[in-house]
Length: 117
Image (cartoon, rainbow, N blue to C red; front, top):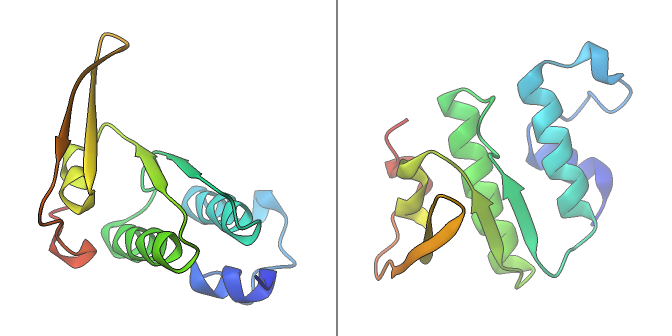
């Protein structure tokens, strides 16, 4: 994937010459996501991908992760404390005290726009 195209996908077109100190926390987070996507991974692990983002950018990033997962045939695993994110997942792995408590299958995942931020 073209790095500039991926930066545009995460809403950072025109910011490629900026240093990290010149970017907001949310922009830095989107750079991290772009860096992972551009490498076309076999598995995309996302630790709190929307943690520092506003609701508009959160929806955009969730949509992007879902699209990337489908287009690259790449599983996307999101680690989050935001239970609302589970609504877009195919499967949800519930952890408690560092152990897997249960796995639930979501027969009808919702769209990113339907999440209540």
